[in-house]
Length: 164
Image 1 (cartoon, rainbow, N blue to C red):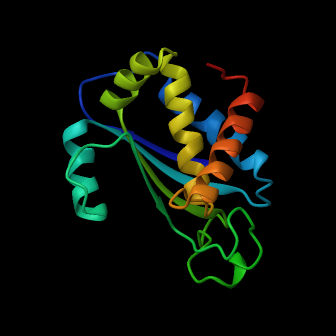
Image 2: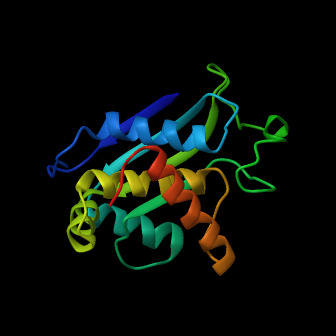
């Protein structure tokens, strides 16, 4: 797996962000039984920057914890059949499935870890697992979709032994 990791802003999370991200992304893709090597872009940023992105791309005028930008369309969430037919789904040089981009607010990671009473590592990992599910076609707009996603998030976190 290729992870393009970038961090902006002076604030640092008290963990090895790149190493933990790689572990969670790989664990989530293994859980989803992704048959391909994959590529993911991850940007850790600040509330101000993610607020701008949230407004620009979603029309929501406030910072958020995580944004996901999937590269591919999935007829059925988490089903990788048919991706070969999609133009630009795979990197032309590496052959890796290009999943898309994840953007995380470091300030939100710290605040939500405190708010929910768990570790920074747990919050960071949860946001990445949540986002990977978005990158492979899952959503939570409808109640049924939300329940499916929440179950998958819990199962991924349990497999990674990152508990509340």
